[in-house]
Length: 226
Image: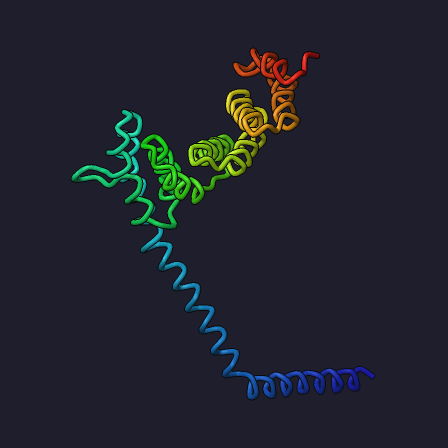
């Protein structure tokens, strides 16, 4: 009985080997090409990361230092356009596209353009910015709302203000401020019900904020006195 089992097992092994040989004869070249392609892709990715992406990140971060210094000094044009030696935020965005520093530079560039009154460029750069840091993203939405408001695109401005006011609700400075701006724009458009909703949210959620302290007068002029 044992010899029979050994014989059967041996035959099964032979069949497996035969199947593998058959498969390899039929698809061997295709598998080899596939493996080679995967190896090439991995090598290309590692090469890009080690020799392009990481050096670019470092250079972009170094360039950001000088631009941020000008921004803190309120030298807006120098922060945006750079000096004779160091690039500004706009150049960092284009030169180091795809880096984390370039993404942050988009936020700064949009802020600079907003201060300079170039609202279309402010919109362009602020829309390109994105971060998982909720307070910073909320601020970016708020600045984008300001730019749209200056362009008299009130619906777009309100949409951004509402995103800014609700993204990080624990913030009792940014949130009530941009909810107020949304309400104020609604009021200017004659949409009093929507304005009341924004003002009431401030009253309910942020009574101790600067906007919350005097929100009752805005509600009262719209007929809400409770």
